[in-house]
Image 1 (cartoon, rainbow, N blue to C red):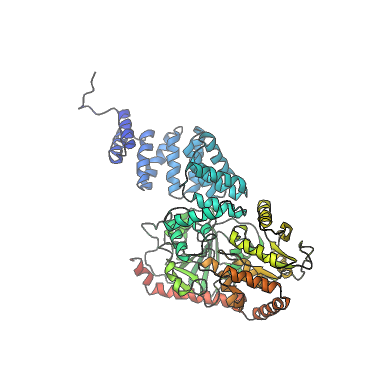
Image 2 (cartoon, rainbow, N blue to C red):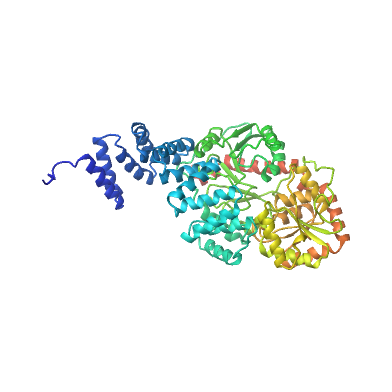
Amino acid sequence: MKTNPEQPAAPTDLVMQGIQLQSQGQDVAAEAKFRQKLALTPLDPLAVYSLCVILMKRGAIDEALALLNPCAAQNPSFAPVWVAYGSALQAKGDRHRAISAYEHALSIKPDYIEALINSGALLRETHQHAKALERFQKALEIKPDHQNAIGNCAILLTEFKRAEESIAMFQRLLSINPDYDYGLGMLCYERMHVCDWTDFDETRSQIMAGVKAGHRTCKSLGFMALSDEAQDHQTCARTFAQRFPAMDTPLWQGQRYRHDRIRIAYVSADLREHPVGHLMAGIFEHHDRERFETVAISIGINDQSRLRHRMENAFEHFIDARGMNTRDIAQKMRDMEVDIAIDLGGYTSDSRSDIFAWRPAPAQVNYLGYPGTMGLPYMDYIIADRQVIPPEHQQFYDEKVVYLPDAYLPTDVSIQIAEDTPSRAACGLPDDAVVFCSFNHDYKIAPHVFAVWMNILKQVPHSVLWLMSRNDTSQRNLRQHAQSHGVDPERLVFAKRVPRVEDHLARYRQADLFLDTHPYNAHTTAADALMAGLPVLTYMGEAFPARVAGSLLHTIGLPELITHSLDDYQRRAVELALDANQRQALRAKLAQNKQHSPLFDTRQFCRHLEAIYTSMWRQQQLGRLGDQLGA
């Protein structure tokens, strides 16, 4: 019997017709079918699910949630609705409820790939790394070539310092999809963390070409360890910034606040035992409470450390926002009427740049933790100095460059270096050797600089290189690299970690010269060496990360330790190593300059920083930022 075309299609047929149209890319027609079905049978789970896929695709998250919330309650055994519900909650930033929705879907269908992947991503975001890894590994058991699962597994393995497994996983990913977003850069960056320079020159060339072409080849932080071109850094950051678009409706829309004091908020995942924490602790404590009201937005872990305790006491408002979603954090800042929001993380680990996409404050600042432009239209300023960003380089920064009068890097002079200096023997160092020191992270040790270091050791008899490698794999690889350069691997000495920073700094006294890295300089580590009285030799390059040690040396009054080529760097290192009198004179000059240098005047540094904040606040009061935003 033929169906009478004048009769309405059966409800089930409407859904099937809609799904067919949806599969053909005809979303408008498909949506009409699903709505027609829901008019006849409200909360039909398949119709709700299919319609919500379309709604979320076009960003109508609230409308999707309005359908999914009652539908999920009405259909507790229909897993797709619960996955869609989780996706909508995830899109709204409600991470905990989203995880619960995915958990419910998995209780119905344990092999539901989408639920495994999405919940794994959220577990990773909430620092539940072990559970997240289990989810992605489960997904790979079901679908071994799932690219998202492989990529997430590889990244999580880096968190657990399982570098060799991570590298193998990245290689597996690239064998499936050579153009996987940021895949080549992540592979190279992880290899650098263990000083594995396999195919380094070829890989670096591919990454450089990809970045210049605007491809998603390498994340901007990893790129800093590969490139010394400020313009390429900007291109890379702008590409990465595309994942953090400005919200259509900013939270701050030009209002002028009427406070007795300027309200400043520092947003950071590193308000704990971390280099950024060490650099900023003294600044937080020295803020003028009569002129500034200080807020901490902590989005990282609470490590229960001494430093964390200091910071909790330093702020008038310390908000542990780790469990809050991005939108709520931004709304909290807007409700508090924050005048100036300072991002201390940029594109570093556990940062949440999308907080600033909501425009929670009139003035938004990129400072300290990330040495470069973020390439975002809603970051108004970057705080620097004239050494790290020369005036002619301002064109490579999307933020307005604001200069501190001296080095942009703060220090905390309240740290008292331990009086007891461990012996060289206790440090594993020979008593009669010239000790070159470089306590940088492994990923900063580039092959071209390591080759120069080996040339230096060859030219300086009885010298050793003292390093701070974090893992056995790095140490093994570095010893092998030394051997390949014709240097006895035993001339590499690896320092062990010590619990207290005061004791760590005391060890620097046993070194003769700090050798900097390039193109990613020592930053906090260079400041530590100078604080401990150890001269630092640097190769000052072109991009921000390659100019930081030079900035510190200019400020401390030791420009003679700045070189501008690898040849000069090598020559100067050998010259100093062979001339104990020169080294002693440099130590004496450093000790003398330290007494009056602005590099080690935390209070004065804070006053200069506050002058910048005051200027930003005045600009906002004049309405200039509001005009720029179209308020």
